Image 1 (spheres, rainbow, N blue to C red):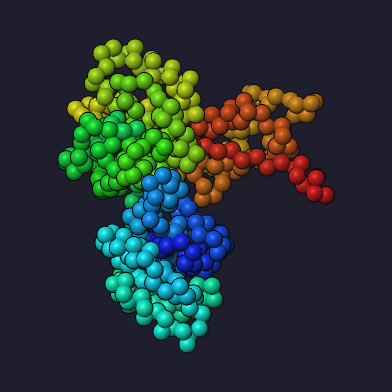
Image 2 (cartoon, rainbow, N blue to C red):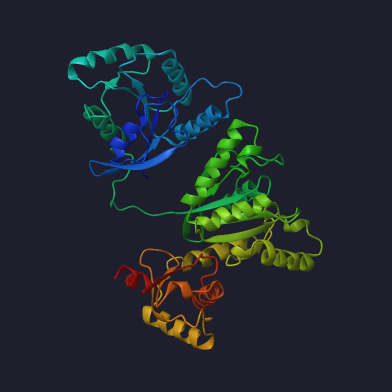
Length: 446
């Protein structure tokens, strides 16, 4: 069970962003009378009757002209939102009445086979509620009239979601078993689906030598010993502007989002081909999302001189993927199953370390000892002083350093402290972030 997702869809300028801001109690989405203001998907949270919902605002759907890249992009973003949604709010304009574009959107939503709630917006007077009857002609069921601007007549909407999700999705604070999500990411045709099938001991995922066979993220539960995980096989990540097929562009967006939602990432490389810029881009996405990670060098069965290849891989990491040096590197053959048990052992080892709580006294003793062994470089006659260090509560791998002046923290000394913590506490595969708080800001404010 999870949080229900509700997408707001409709033609331009029907008030989607106004309704989004009303439901999420925010001003996150820009509201303008000009069509096309919203182009990307915007996410927000709504709480109602003790339950939490994810709301998605989308751009206005229009008939796509042949050479209109903006409309194509909006269509792609709406496609993703509809795919993610458990319920779709089809928003229309009660002042303008039914238009041909409304009919186009209705036909589009029917093809999605998703639950759709027809809502007629911009009716700001109970005496005008009968205007909503015109929208029966769209064939999308009984319309609910409302004014998103004034918050009028939203009760029928809340009644529907209460009935729709009462027994399906959990409420905040409700006890539930948390299953760790492990995402397999990488370029097309590196063996992600083969690895998933190897883990699941099945042919659940279609495997093909043609790049881009997997498009939608595929999830399945699997176990390593007595540990249960949710495994996610993603579509191959490629630059969006290099993709010709619309559905492949959507797969890129899904894959990037999977990294954000994953608890642990398996980043696959193909040792039979050179490291590409796209590999570095994916690595950067993992780093930016601060995800625990294991790097997998797949197709190891094709390597003849394994010792020489391992040295080349190590040198390559030093030169081109140095920012993922904290991640363990495991060589496997997903096709033959060679060294896959070693990878599973590495996953269990990393999982055990994810929520390590560092003793504060021991941490401060370690840092004092490290500073004694290696003094921080001076700057303009000043020396960095570290007063106290704590692990940030509730944030994995984040440590707060209270110092005399943050401007004295040199990059090389930052890395030294990071490596000291990582090596001592065994944070292999876990991103570490050091936050420095100094007294200089207090003196500036005084």
